[in-house]
Image 1 (cartoon, rainbow, N blue to C red):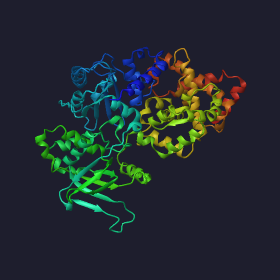
Image 2 (cartoon, rainbow, N blue to C red):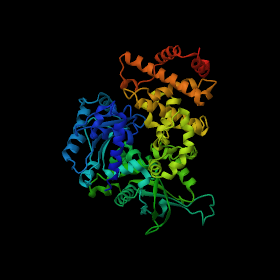
Image 3 (cartoon, rainbow, N blue to C red):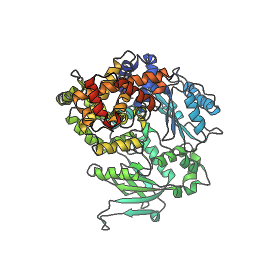
Image 4 (spheres, helix red, strand yellow):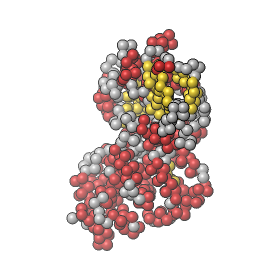
Length: 597
């Protein structure tokens, strides 16, 4: 087991403590900070609201939780920031997997009213999924406990939502954190069988004059065959699901309705008719041991993730003697032979179009869009490293020559905010953070705080609109960099403030963005001299807005999770206009134009 990821976690925790300890004293504890790390690094919760989802730090029960409204998923999380200490089975199985669920089921959970309300509302919803997740950083792998957790089930009267559990040890955490950077190349072959040649459709372009097609085969196969393939892949540590569509955080992507059908002896015979099937892309395939079997080399499931994992979830919990009950339950598998290296465009398009009906929630797939990779190249030319994937950050940090090369063009941009003393870390920008900055500017600070986890989901409004804006050059690369630098400038001021929270960067960008969109003189924001006047004005507006909201009885943590109150904002703007000197007032008046009066 590779323990280097724990060093990375500790490095991140020290950075978190450096940034937020003054405003969140509990972060002094590494255990508490690990909860914060899991929420912000693995679940993409904004740092400002992460503490709202931390419920406990006693090494018992639920430590933190996450609710994804759009996906109808609830994650209940227990974190063990251990080194050599062994996990207590009772602390995990009894005190985390069972006891809190009972309290939530009975409506008696007291550590978070929001969590109790969500659970009560959705526990009877068959489309809702509840995932209990354990993250542990101990040195020694605990295979027995992991198997017990991963196969654990909860069946109580009144609960109709799907509930499962999963344990993440160091290697699992490393894969989630770094992504493809640490993926080992493993070759894998498997065999898909069908009943006879009549239940197989073969498309052979070479021998049947079909020049516009690729080699393909449609196979009717039993769900037990697929179960054995998944089991074999797991045993060999082969990633069966295409790297860009693996479920977020390794979630198995099960579907409660599919599971219900498979579990019902009367219904499972209709499974073939209810299901859209599975699509596999492979390097090659040939006839297997007999003409009714197909041997596939290095397969990747690009559509049907939920189907395959739901099949595996159900059959893995069936006693060996009863597996034959599923031999006559069938599913259609489409096998496509594609040379991924030499025909990457076709490969990616097949992945995309095969998933157009089923929203892919994986941030890696969304981030891999050609628009972001193009933006990455343009930003690098200007001295900034855009981390489209976690592996990009790893590569940049270990390339001193590239950092030195980028420093000169970057310096020209840092002049925009008057920052001559900048470091190489500030030249690196995570894609999610950049999109969050654009989100605040285009849609608002409230959205930036509360909708961050939707930014890299292909089916989200914010992802698609921001993608279209970047594609259509609504904001040029120069403007995007300068907007990020305004955010960075506000962040630096916030970190140097007495309360470590003033100004609120997303509010500053929000309030500038509102007037920018109505301004006939938008260029003023991107000129150095006028930019600082505009920035300082809206910073004072953001500070005044915060004071007025807090004076009304709403504290900071509640305020940032609430929509902006336009009446309070307008009052703050009018009040701060009176404080400006004539020259500054003239710039703000020109910038606001139609909305000034």
